[in-house]
Each structure stands twice: as structure tokens, then as C-alpha cells.
View (cartoon, rainbow, N blue to C red):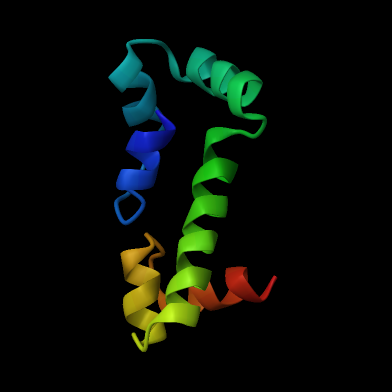
Length: 85
């Protein structure tokens, strides 16, 4: 599942879609994901989006807005605020 998430970071990843992929309820998916990975699905997605954004900021000359969109953030403002934290 983490491979799927990492491959689709630029997309809108919904808990319902992830749960449907494995054929269980959202509640059970969320609980099992946290037990297995250590963080809830939303936090995992956010952490990996941030890591990808930081890497692109360091290694490329891409504009912040483009990096934000490539990493699944809705705007550069959201990415800027989250990266600053």
C-alpha cells in the first residue's frame, strides 16, 4: 500500500479509495494502517509529500508552485506553510 501511495502522491489520495483497493472499510483500513506503519494514512501521505517537496526544492530549479502541484498540494501557499513548519 505504501508503494501505491508513494507512486500517487501528486493525486488526490482519499482514505475511501485506499480502503476500497484492499476491500475493507475505511475504519478498519485506517486502524490497520496505523498499526502497521505507525502513523495514520493522512499523516503518512503528508510526510511523504513534504519529503518529496523538500527534495525537489533542493535538487531542482522548478518553481515552488510546480513543486507544490507535483507533490499533491493544492497550491504553493499550502506547501509553503507546511514546509515552513
